[in-house]
Image (cartoon, rainbow, N blue to C red; front, side, top):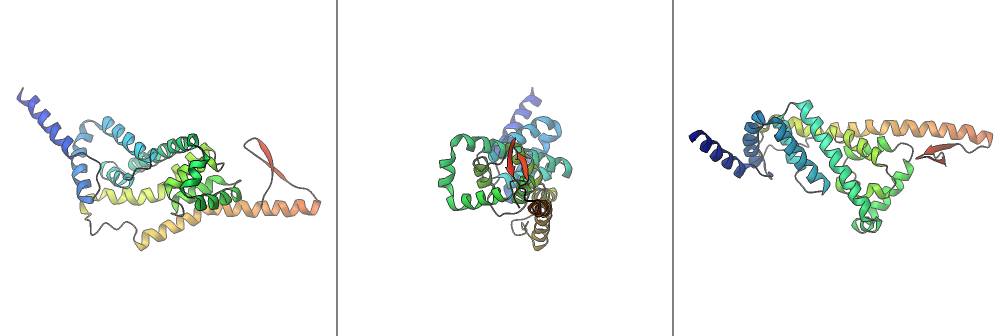
Length: 247
């Protein structure tokens, strides 16, 4: 009976400290409490983590960065990175589906200039959307919430959106997860994830993600030049429809 009462008291104490962290100090406290639970209730803790992370991504609620650091503190790097990437892709796809149901007018009111600019870019990359989606996730050209909300109204298929998100969040996710693995050594003053080295690494990865786009564009131009000499207009099939091949 005393053991049961002790467990109830301990569980109540843990619940008081388990909350969405907003600082490194809070994150350390949460990590300490959750780490104990994860050792005895691994599946439950991972499922709860996945639900919370996916919820934040679905409704564009801040907090994903802290949860990514927490994953690095709780799990081995490959497991943490896979978990974060999967939750990011599922949550972003849920946001995509909700945004598609809300209508195009809502998106236009959010940021019409940015949406118009991205529409032109999507049209340019109609034949290589997956590498372009990866590029958008790796580099901070557009806020993630805007990409999630605007994508369904710009002709980006859900399957391409999901795959591009899953692959694109891995490079920055690696930086955060790796930092979370040494969480106890972090302080508010030392919390500088975007060091010059990390920024250079992200820039290099962004450039590499664009490489398939550039190669594909070069090949299309070669095909266009060849058919132009023969007086023909080459076509490709996009989503079941035949469209002229663009350069």
